[in-house]
Length: 422
Length: 149
Image 1: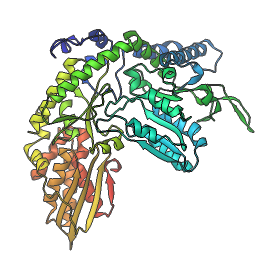
Image 2 (image 1 turned 135 degrees about the vertical axis):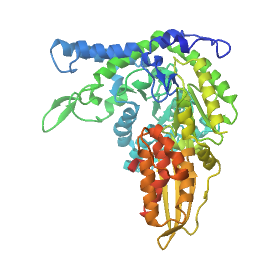
Image 3 (image 1 turned 90 degrees about the horizontal axis):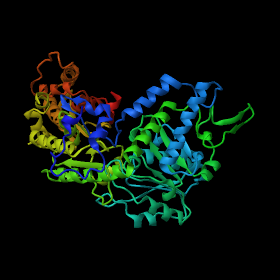
Image 4 (image 1 turned 45 degrees about the vertical axis):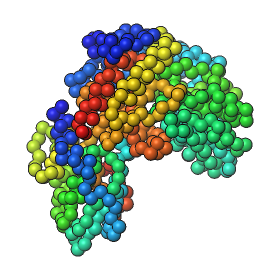
């Protein structure tokens, strides 16, 4: 169904295809559709990725076969639903190589995970004059929760700078690690310009001073292997819908010793072990942090998504996408008046660009008419845009199912922009 | 492609390239900032109003071709208009860009070149940002956002 639009070879030499992209594409029903009469070229994966049929089927099967609330009933369906929900937790644990399922909390999204840590871990530790260290690359979700925590406690938010290529200045970062730094919260990969940060080195530098580190792996997790024990991070957040899973399900990893010491975030059912009007006691990990009926279908869909990723092979995906990113870079660099924003040596998945004399919004509208879906705007990273002196960029972001031919379509669509704007 | 050429008509591209009245106004009697948080468009509008007549209109800012051209044409159109006439223009413009694309709209001269946004629903706010900022300036609201309207 998609073969007509993705025949190989049109983009010059064939990619060093470490994955069978046509086979992969056939697993994603939406990739067969058209937009404005043109085959869909979906290059907005950093916003959300498309879902393989396995994920859609898993969600449908859950509702048609075992739907029930979890951790409550003694009846068979509840038992089956609970088993499926907990199997997903084990799948997530394995995917990120956490030591124990006690360290895996399901959230709505990465944002909620960061808020949980800012609230239950950071706030009790922050005093006036203390510091929280983030970087100039952060998404608003890894800025605002810390601003709120700092406002509430009198602590100060510090920002590690980047260079013009979009690389974190590690020397500056290290200098900003002070005796007052209580936590470092930093992205593993920029959603706006694709920079991959040296996460393991960041953790090492912070730990050398006894400072805990939260990593935002929202973008990294679907492009590269993220191993929480190899990284030795204290906390890590990711979101299901970027990892080919459904929306509304996120993951918070935290070292058990931290989770044990933290108060709950939200109160309610499921997170308690006993409740009287005088006092309540908290459930064991990780349930202490999961109040109320969780997103059961989301967890089950995420399980299927992680199975799918590992079925294709995350290492193969990384290699394939690296080739694709290099190809897309050449396509855009070959166009007049087009400038890439974010040229870090370590980079993945993202082609952020501006066109001299054309606002990104106009770029987005014109390429949309060619069937090409890209994101235009500030990408929820306004301080980063300010760093580059730009109000916005156009951003094409790739996933495992994209092809060189699609990047050629992007190139032709951008050429059309240049024609319209003379 | 025809919807695209309707959207990006030559007159719009011309106003985007060479926006008219694109400067600050030192002695403005009214001033407001318009902001579209969805796309980052931001403009500052300056008006000089004397005895109920708009004697000067100018703007500064950064935005897409549609928002810039709309602001440029609006400032040209507003100059010399009474406040009542300007308000009527606001109403007519608002009606024009929000009429469904399959229905006819009245001729507003060069402002009609912006009627093409009707085929691009998320771009309607780009065309109307300048006009909402104009209303905010007259109401002495220092800042307005497309997400409040």
